[in-house]
Image 1 (cartoon, rainbow, N blue to C red):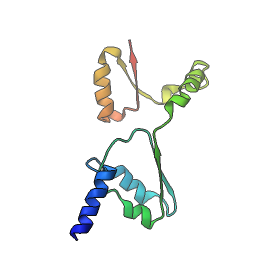
Image 2: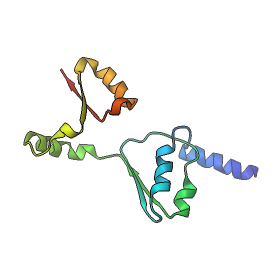
Image 3: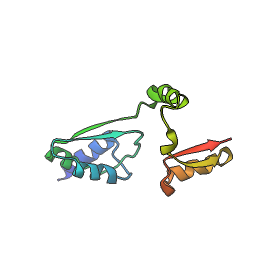
Length: 122
C-alpha cells in the first residue's frame, strides 16, 4: 500500500495536481456521452487533486484543452464590428468608468452579477 501511495504522490508532483476546484471538470466528465469529447478552452490555471481519471477512462472520454487563440481572431472581429456586421451588445453586460477599472476586474474575477464583458469608458 505504501508503494502505491508513493507512486500517486510522485505522479501528483510531476503533473502538479495540487489544490483548486474540480467541479467543472467533474460535471463535464459525468455529463458527456460515452466515447464523447470534453474540451476545455480559455485560461484554466487551477491545479488540483482528485482529477476524475476513472470517469474519463471507464467511459472512453477524450479530453482536449488549450488556450483560446484570441490573438488570431481579434483583427477580424474588430473589422466586423467597424463594418456593423457584428453587434457586440449581446456580450456587453456592464459599462463602467475607466477610473473604476480595478473594481471592474475584481467584480469580473469574482463572477458577481453575471459579468460577461465590461466596457471601460474614459
